[in-house]
Length: 350
Image (tube, rainbow, N blue to C red; front, side, top):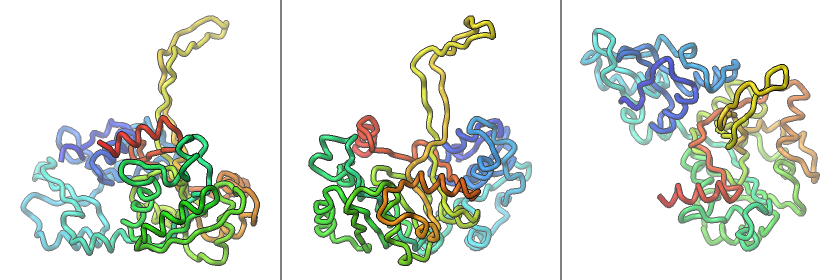
């Protein structure tokens, strides 16, 4: 329980880290042991959309009127209905004096079938798997990048498993470089989900091949790079995208960058004011996973190189809102270059 108790003075970034470490989407906010409210990942996303920084305190974004129960004053058979009706992730249990003494979780109160039904999604996924992966040479001189091993399976299997666990059963792969090897892998694998290949006769960037789905898809679609593994709630991501009415939503990961030198700050006379030793900067960076409204497929040029960043820039020029769904850095694995690939291998081996 203590892993889910957070003080109001803590930062948004720390809250995201605690959610990731605990594998939960909500925290209980308490001070000196007394219930102050709850903080969900949705509360954090709304805060960021309103301009909050990752270093800001959570105190202004807490739900101060949460659903809670008093100790020994609730019936277990009613809990399931409370969780389902209010769609809660957790419910704090408090004493008469307001002290948090227990936390009840939806995944402990619902059956496996009820949990699956709550999180099931049925939309297609497009994995951009046609690139040459030059940053991972010499591996990619032999294998297409999606088949580079991470642990005991290729990266593309890790990616697909994240989606199929949420109920997705329709996968599209854009293929170009070493496509015959990739097709042979799936022929041998004989997956239970539907796999369809989108052929690129020449490299079309990170979005160009999506034009081939125009008129064939009438629902939102996930689009992901083939070198990133994102551990998040895909049903919640899709709901966030739809509820906010975005044409495109990108997943953004927190990322710390430390300058390995002393940064010199000058005064107005051009003299040294002070040295900031190894300063750390925090950003939200594009994680390479998106949700697209199907109407966007019609505006992607046919048989021309076109990147998803071009699509995003076009939407912003039109004044359209592009959604940002933040996740904590530990939920994002990027194997696109050697330094990150080694980290991923160590993570899956251990």
